[in-house]
Image 1: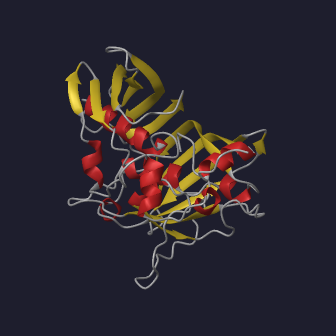
Image 2: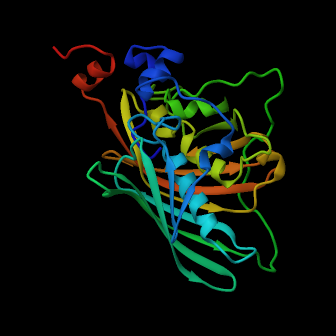
Length: 320
């Protein structure tokens, strides 16, 4: 998730309510609002954009939620592409450090513009508090391109795409951080958080609580879905742990259908091949209900068990 993920709420000695969200954000409980408004950027010129992200609406456990930071970068990249018909196709981000609650700066460089492809790089930084200096938090590359004349086919097998019925209530995310208040989920996986369940897959349906009017649940939302659903590692872990994203690559396989943009849930599937000494891979696919594969991603996460003193601190107790 780009920053450290939360442990289960009861492991921290709290319940998932407004009080918990306020504590996790370090202040008042963050708002849930129209998705698009959170990506309004100030254009400073020269490929530099800024966004005030100091209210912790998209806060993870100890830093900005990675999906949100990537969505901001994607928005800045979009504004830097000038060739008509070039759309996002590939996006890679490396997280160098936690992204703080601050006025974030996204600097975009157009590396090359061709007839069918635009190549870009980006850097996300935050103020250091020392004059106008900034520290680099995230760096990455992106490819925008145009469609070509070729056959379409899909070999990947979709999951069960039975959409939740109107009488099936969504659930809150089991990862109790402010950013996840923006989503409704319908789990379709086995095993619960931190139970050590011997399962091979996590996933379910995911929807924005407020896609906005007009809807804004486009490729920026797909990044949130791939990065924000309950990781398989968090089910297979047997003890309270923290974790986060080290690098993340996404391929956008087609434009997002209008019905998803307007708020229809997407189906997320997460799988991992191996966890070794705190490094775990995670492959995600995001599907529309009609069977379109919208996004594929792979990230390298770290995961680390909490030591007893840290767990005591999270519970608000004094280490003994």
